[in-house]
Length: 199
Image (cartoon, rainbow, N blue to C red):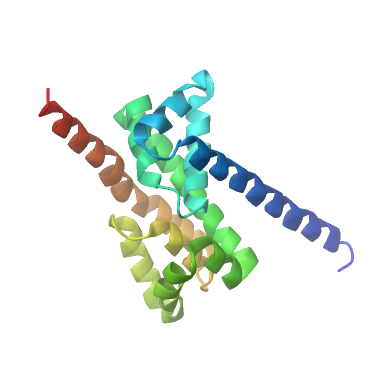
């Protein structure tokens, strides 16, 4: 037990450092208005040149880990910056990785952490799902597949259940494409159509 304690402490310390870094970035994003519109987000991303794709994926990861951040704005900006297919692919990669991070953070830090990340009202609204056993797995899979559900929060809630990581990853990888396509490709197409009416 003595040999494992330093390793655990280092991993816990690293987790807190990572969360602090995310917090600083989120504060910067809101302070500069980066998350206020797809246009502002797009300008920020393309400013990184050849690193823009990597930065975009990292931001999409963060947008899942920090539930209040609007993932849909990132999806639309990704389509504008990289085109429909690459924009979709980068969003998919980032959101899947972010979902796994949220699940693992929930497993590690528990209910108080999840409630702090989600906010009291949202947490109280969906925590009852966690006590439904195998029924939660089916409800979670449907929520991930269809757009409109609070996917990011539910990834945290899933971490409070007995769901195994392997099953969680399978649901995310198979279920995310539909909702991402609707949010990014669908909203972008609608926006282009609306703007064309005023030309």
